[in-house]
Length: 99
Image (cartoon, rainbow, N blue to C red; front, side, top):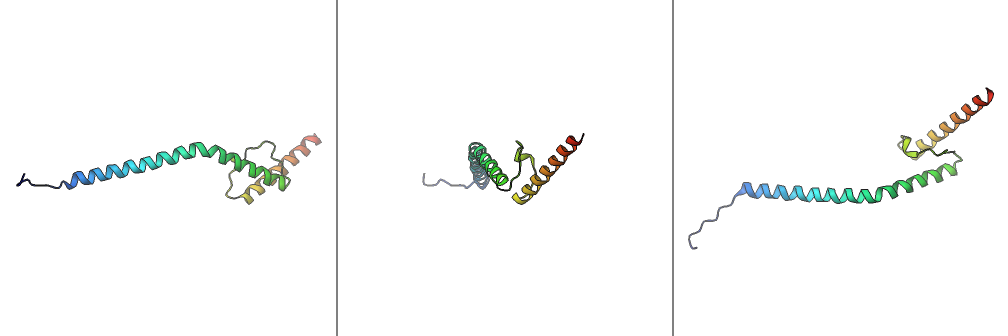
């Protein structure tokens, strides 16, 4: 016991630390994905409700449109898109009535 040599294996220490860091990151990612899986549907329903309230506020007919189908960057762009859709729908209905 008196004459034992302790050798430090740096490669094994480095490899083990990388593996633990990777496992920690994957665990973090797993928990984030689980959280998203449970909270995302409720968040999307709330967002849809907010858009419907916004459309009611500005008297825009949604006609059961899914807001997710409209690609916009902000709520102002969404309002403009919905107003343009409403105008196009009105024009088409006038055109159909003329026939």
